[in-house]
Image (cartoon, rainbow, N blue to C red; front, side, top):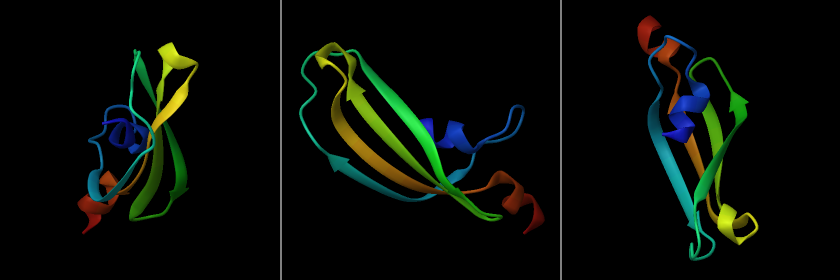
Length: 79
């Protein structure tokens, strides 16, 4: 959901995930957890997003790192 929200514009449908890679770095022990999405590359047809999940109750310890390739909503309309 964080990756989809990162590529959508206000009032626009979110992108469709075409590829997802998840790396589990550590067990989440304390919580709460926070996702930090960031756009790595935006093209005309797709966007590459990285999402880092941290355990905020454990000094922002990295728990998960994921990358997602999403089809841009505008690309679906023109196809």
